[in-house]
Amino acid sequence: MKILLTGATGFLGGKLFAALLADGHSVRALVRPTSDLSSLPPPAAHGGALDLAYGDVTDCRSVLDAASGCHVILHAAALVEPWLPDPSKFISVNVEGLKNVLQAARETKSVEKIVYTSSFFALGPTDGRVADESQVHHEKFFCSEYEKSKLAADHVARQAASEGLPIVMVYPGVIYGPGKLTAGNVLAQLLIERFSGRLPGYMGYGSDKFSFSHVEDVVQGHIAAMHRGQPGERYLLTGENASFMHVFDMAAIITGTKRPSFHIPLWMVSMYGWVSVFFSRITGKLPLVSPPTVQVMRHQWAYSCNKAKVELDYEPRNLREGLEEMLPWLNSLGLINY
Ligand SMILES: NC(=O)c1ccc[n+]([C@@H]2O[C@H](COP(=O)([O-])OP(=O)(O)OC[C@H]3O[C@@H](n4cnc5c(N)ncnc54)[C@H](OP(=O)(O)O)[C@@H]3O)[C@@H](O)[C@H]2O)c1
Image (cartoon, rainbow, N blue to C red; front, side, top):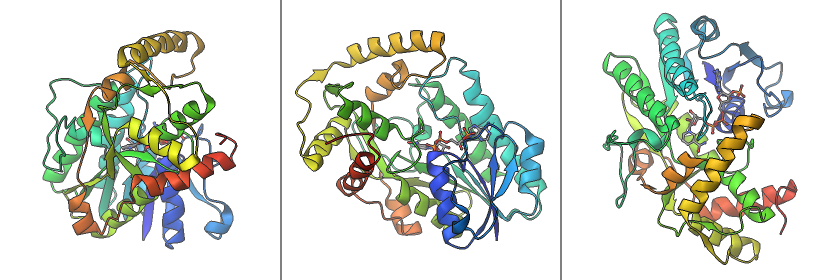
């Protein structure tokens, strides 16, 4: 079975690529000419040259060429940023890019299944409850343009499913764990800030809630969705629901370091975000914290992955186990010290 994987040079995609090769699959990765290939699996992992198709999801022709002869498409590529100076890029990559992948799937007769990586953002905030796959985004407001684009892409994916395209949609929570340090690995980035002292306190008072998904669990969830996911179905690949305050407390316990001794109110973090955005427009360097990050933290995003547990044998580890692996990894790279 030949698989086309998009987003292979990203945090999730890199791990997915390695796992698919380890399972003995033949994988072609769609990469951009500008992609950093350093995190792709070494030749020993696949016994030969990597099958790379150069292109861009915004270029339909290149996706079509890459899909040639493939039986499955795993579409994990996306622009994953809380803020961009040009927000239209979220639509062109995350929505139009998905449309191109679906078009390629329609035109490539060998394609039997598509697994599309959506996001918990596509289901919307859950404020005060734990939601499942039946939740529909309320669309009353959006915390970020990224969230808006992932919802728009979700509509596209569901529409394609209703037209009979064999697409399975998976919805990870906040993905964390060892892996490439892209903007997608936000927990690693925040832990680095926390341990360096640049983020001296908790952000807010712990009223936020997120579902934390370990990257290896999300990878296994994708592979299970590829084999056993029912076309047209949605599967939440989420994990333990917790606040960032809880994560920082747990990190302190695991590393034997002091917990933050004060809270930074979200309005203050937001002001910092506005200043960061201002400087970003001058320097071109994207900010770690921006106003949309704070908007997201003003809500709760708690989900149940029971459906994936039952139908995909999805077995997410708890946050403590995940952090007990991730913190020594960050330490071993010298990115944090304790
Ligand atoms: N990270 C999370 O917490 C999280 C949570 C829920 C869902 N997700 C979803 O999971 C997927 C992977 O996220 P991630 O965290 O691994 O993101 P990431 O590390 O930022 O990786 C994004 C990948 O998409 C590729 N890409 C971006 N624009 C592209 C384009 N125009 N054409 C082709 N490839 C393009 C990137 O290629 P380059 O290397 O060339 O930039 C990279 O390989 C995304 O669909 C995201 O929405 C992520």
